[in-house]
Amino acid sequence: MRRLAGLIVVATAAIIGAASAQEGPAANGLYRDGLPAVLEQAEKTGFVAAPEFRDAYGRAGAPRMVVFWMRPLGEATSTPRVTRDHTTGVAVVGAASSGATAASVGGFSQTRERSVGLLVDVPPDPLAPSSSRAAEAAFTDALLQSGVRMVDRTAIIRLQGGDAADPRVAETTALKDAADVLVEITASGGGGPDQLIYAIRATRVADGTVLASTVVEEEELRQAMTYEASASGGYHPTLTPRALGRLLAGRLQTLLAARW
Image (cartoon, rainbow, N blue to C red; front, side):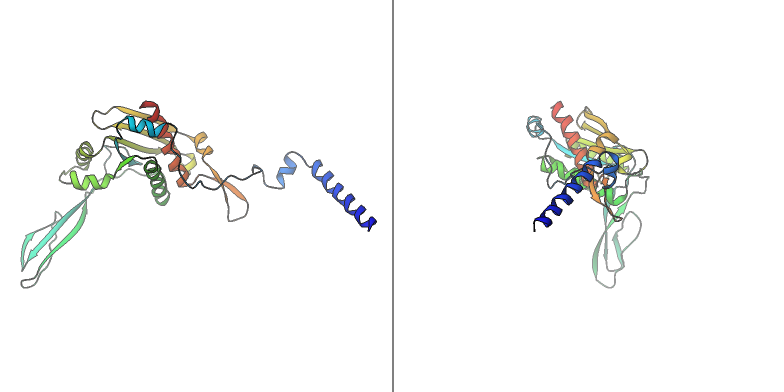
């Protein structure tokens, strides 16, 4: 028994000695280069508003915000409009702007509602469609969680600017009546989400005063990265759409809190 205990002590000492001898890059190589000793949490469950933002937002009168995601105001866009076709018997009472009509037989009357878009150029979004939608949702959700009164861009254009032939005129008209602060988020560059340059701009709708303007580049984007498991094994740093949206929202809030 004593002999067995002695062998265990010797083996333990040998393992400790071998571990202490492997220091520096060689030891790290056993666990993949660049991997932190303790992995960060993949995603935080909630968004924490920037310090002083809630108080500053209240002092500013809780302005209504509308977000233009991945395109600035004034760029051409496709604005959906709802039109109606109404037929009574075989006589066409009303027709959609496209010229199409609804068929009817005898005294049967029907009303058909359709969505018609204005065919104009739409600026490209450097993010993949699914990633862009997820990042926009995270950005908007972060503002909502911070108590911001949000205005839906598409809804106000349909309700208040739908009669304008030019979508840019429709947007401008709708914004003046329904929103107080216009927030524009754009991106430029090439590569993945962590390689782009994001521009944030907040403008007071009433007089065009710029309330916040900045860019978020690679250094800040790296700070928002988390480690996720890869299909081939191990972990790799990733900028998730939700982390991106929250980062941009937090940056905007910091600037607005300082301004207000």
